Length: 313
Length: 248
Ligand SMILES: Nc1ncnc2c1ncn2[C@@H]1O[C@H](COP(=O)(O)OP(=O)(O)O)[C@@H](O)[C@H]1O
Ligand SMILES: [Mg+2]
Image (tube, rainbow over all chains, first blue to last red; front, side, top):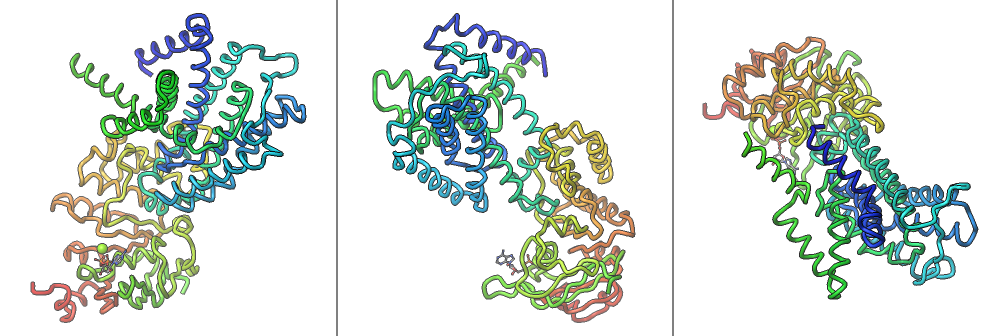
């Protein structure tokens, strides 16, 4: 890593640590959401940016995990240490099931994942005796591990910050591992990968399950922040926005999905305070990205850097 | 039969109504160098696809070292020792040449499933990748993305990928396609220098290259084998002159 990037990292970490003092509850809350949805976008991007698969069902894993935690904690009184892993486990199990969609590619894959997503949303919505219907499950407490309990949103912000940093580091190892390299190989040429000895279907399936596990973890972080979960968490727009965040920020990168989450959530907050048309604005942002910045914000930053370097040299 | 590296029995491949490969039988001895020739559209590439598992044949049987592999998936055949190159360059453009080779090297073993360690920390793979690149004349290029090197170098990479899966039987589909005479010379020399223990099947248009390298030659025409023999026999055959050399 060069010095400029190291500096940037140090400044970003210091800024993140100081945010609750500088920004107050509003910005701290927005930053928490940005990290949580950034993590969801990152999970989508493991498939989109690395394996070249556009999944629109990741809200399913996110929501199933969130519901599991909420129901177990609120209705059955499970402690965080049991409820949170159970959420990740169930979300991941669903990903293992939905992973059969990787037998298809391209537009068929997109269509199947949309359909699967609607099934989960429908269940959350209709099976009200278990899921609470449109009201969902409310009164989810902050997480607590033994005597260590989170008592405020500011404290929870630091929990999420630490979790996101750990996930980011783990993700970095994963995408640079032989397995991660294999995903990029499949994206570029599945036929060549098969002739090199890869069982590409299984390779992508494993990526799908890992990605579902990460989305499930984001779901756990979400439900403890939000304090409730309802069918909106499982809805199609959540899956679309997660993909949008990855694309706007820059696919195939780690910071990209988080930056994209910042843009999408920030815009929504700002725009919806005076007009009820944030979907239209999101659409416009998406089109502008695809047309003028296909590499997203990270790509723009790289271009600016390259130009500055060119001027120096 | 076990001495045959490859045995193809009555293989057929239909595309709709077109029999691209029409009842081809072929025995290639271990260590043999076999060249396939035939006019464009004769079915040479389709035959390779069916033998290596890229396509499923419509009929017939393929055995590798006496083992029936007709129903095995392509990656399993690779694990058993088949390696191949593609007529249309099929490399990973966004990956560096070193990463391209790393994919080939770990593709046939369990290391491809490792998720907890960056690929570049596998010293053995790195060393092997550098050697593999040097072997095809790509030394010093490991850090370059494949899309930034010349077409000729991508053809060399194409060959290196196939060589690094540890093949016992190597299928080369027009390795010199689209190259300049000098580059052609380089690649065919590399192929000639491959160890004799490696069984080789090569599709080649250039008659001089083909007949210089081959132990035996198979001539394909409209999906059928019309002749098999030594380079001398093939050169002398009037029917081959007709269909292959055409009006030349
Ligand atoms: N995927 C395909 N679908 C339909 N027809 C094909 C396909 N691939 C090849 N063919 C046809 O099969 C015949 C043999 O093609 P090919 O094996 O590429 O010949 P060669 O390699 O000898 O030039 C040609 O007529 C070609 O048009
Ligand atoms: Mg061909």
